[in-house]
Image (cartoon, rainbow, N blue to C red; front, side, top):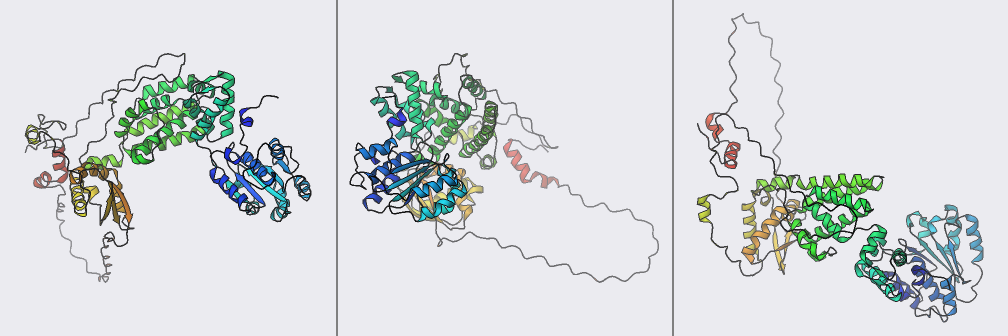
Length: 604
């Protein structure tokens, strides 16, 4: 017997062999057991997810001995004929090759014949969206009222191209992309049956490239066996299919978050010279950024796929990066992916996109300005404090990767323009030094946190008061709230459905950081807010608009007066000066703020 590829040798034979499509298998099995069989089915899904295999298994269950039944024997003659495509009762048609109206007319005439062995004459049309509009119209009447012994099964990857009149006559089943974990473990089982050693990281690397298609993954495994023999590891997958390892992705992400642009560009150069797919690399980086962002905002929903030895370094870098900066980073990378999709020079767009992404992390946005007004310092360029693990991304005969470039010292800040009459005392303490009188007032040791006692309505009101005191701008936006309960650190707060200002303020980064800081002292642990809407909570206060000013009444036109006698012109009086007085200038709020920020005094 000639050699059979893995995709055909390990094709599912029964309903139990279908992986990752439990919702489809359960519905078909229940329909068979309850005798609720339709006359037309439509299987929709990406390539390699099991549309044809499921249709053949369904045909076996219908035409097997004693059928229809779910637990049929795949080794009996009828089932083997269907599996090998030589059954007279199961007609498989390629919609791309038989798309004309004449082919559909012949099919319509042939369905009148009764089945030879089984109970049903099954017509399976693959890629049915390739049929012409005339062919669909010729099939409508037969599809709606077929003979009792005829059943239609359609399969397609593009259901939007099928006429709505066809869709309304079929039961539709959407086959989902198979999860990478299921594909990886199935590949390991296939390799064990074939006497091949396949590591689990290599299997996951194949599953990521297959992108939910089992047939693609099996074909890749077949190719790897031909190349590597009986031992396959992750490096072989990276070399054959141009996949970037998770270690290299973590290294690139660390350079990106740490703003080490020279090292990042050098790594891109090495990957490009090694033949790596630049689009796949960007997709892997975006997936890693998404994983870290989800782990930061919703740790219970996170799925960790990055290497263990990189997680601590990446987590520390992510802690110093606000969530809004990560979102802006994803927007830049998404735009870069769109540009690379239609460009022939993908490396150019990738490098430009990564440069823009690094600069986006250093930009000051409105959130930084608000934090600065509330007393927090503006974010500075972070310097990695935890050394990144030195892991070689792949064996490439290129020059050694240079050490990460030391960040250049920040340029000296320009001296502020001093107005006349102001003099800054040069011996004032810098902003980051603690004065002696303040240092002496600091406690020697921090007070121990309060024992865990849970949040109460009274403690919630105290927390709101502290938030308004620490952050007048954001805390002042919090209106009416109602404490409804706490469940293991999850505090439920009710607000009015129209109070959007309160919702945005409580969920904003400024108040969230303050609550993490203040809540342990009040209730003994950090809290997480869960906002719900309640009509009984007072709505936000709406300021009434001032009444409109009365329209001026036109004065009656004065009567012409006799021309006065000519008098000598008088010297015009100078208008009053708009310059502030000395006392007004000294007590101006902006001047007082400048004196406070620069630790200056005014010498009169």
